Picture 1 (cartoon, rainbow, N blue to C red):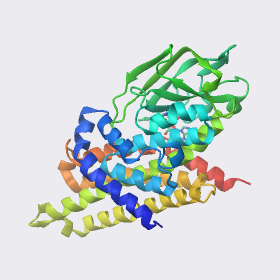
Picture 2: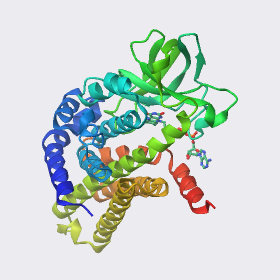
Picture 3: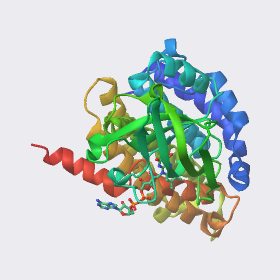
Picture 4: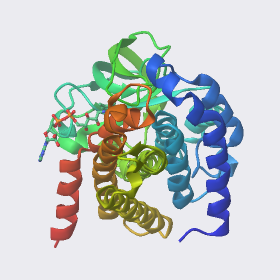
Length: 376
Ligand SMILES: Cc1cc2nc3c(=O)[nH]c(=O)nc-3n(C[C@H](O)[C@H](O)[C@H](O)COP(=O)(O)OP(=O)(O)OC[C@H]3O[C@@H](n4cnc5c(N)ncnc54)[C@H](O)[C@@H]3O)c2cc1C
């Protein structure tokens, strides 16, 4: 499925990840450090805005390339891939719905690594059910006044701007939501506490508060009342990214498990000589490849301009479950060592778990797949 060009991109990102990401992953996890230095290198290498057209400062590649890049970055360390995914999401939003002025102000600086983005949908009472959001934008003579807050927002502790989903019409349900681009420097903008997470601990996640932020009319992204639909459509590409990220985590786990099984000796021979372990490794490799192909299929559909709604949910759901199951098996193959901090598989198991939760939980993915199946 990959062309020579995709393979070149894969090899380039793999070399970068092996040289500059994988060696520091354990330290980043332990310190929960935001790796600004690595992100600066990624901006230099053109690894932000993979599908953003070159004339807007992106890499101008296809969605399949994006999947390939995400897998390789994640094989190095998932928190690094996560940042690439976040920029891709914001880049897609700005390309599809941004005005030239919004692109100039946010897109180019973001892709150069000079402006850190976030997107804010989730609230205390609105997780899977986005229609429960309470953040409100009220019309004023000059634009809008934003009040409310968001929870568990990736990059919240470090972001320079955030795309906020807010209610602009209380009576209109999903058609009463709009997106606003909000500067972190705006009066009334405040950051909540940084969360300490199970995995992907170098990713910075926290709350945001909006207390009467005065927004000009030009802060609205896309048409009024279309915010819910715009966010949901962008999340389809986001799910392909998370599927690829999960595949990358599982690939790192498989490589570590194979190496360990060959060198660890018990009963006078490598543990890899036991058929019980061989079959575990075989199942890991088989399911991993199935997840990768589902991910590439969803990406290729998007590249062909076909609907990828069900395909991206299938890929995210299958790959996320596969990554949790098989990083768990990698821990098992390491025995007690796999449970000890500092061994890569222990971190991979923790890093995989969130793939079943964010960008829509696995239950919500199944709901989307079923809805597509049953559609008239
Ligand atoms: C590390 C991290 C980073 C995140 N980053 C962001 C971000 O950058 N921006 C952002 O906006 N959000 C972000 N989120 C929020 C994330 O998208 C939500 O946590 C997720 O959508 C689930 O919402 P919830 O946690 O409120 O769970 P809930 O919706 O309360 O769900 C709880 C459980 O009930 C199940 N459930 C709920 N409804 C149904 C249903 N109809 N059918 C079957 N099962 C159901 C769920 O699958 C889940 O198992 C992040 C979360 C985390 C933990």
